[in-house]
Length: 66
Image (cartoon, rainbow, N blue to C red):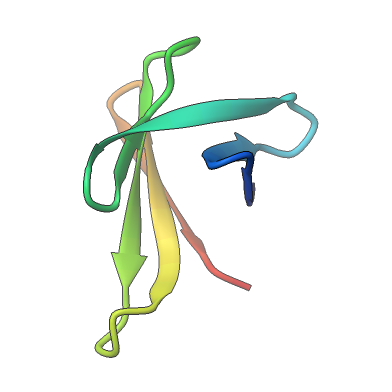
């Protein structure tokens, strides 16, 4: 997954998929409007984003920040 900020918006691109804008529902929680999925960003002890979890179809897919 590739997460980028552009024009004040956050967009996520999953491998071999188009880049899609996500929208904030709370701090570190975002949702898609084109699919039924949400993203929660994970933070380390210093408060830096360390990864995310994609919630879709009743499953959770974790991805560490590279």
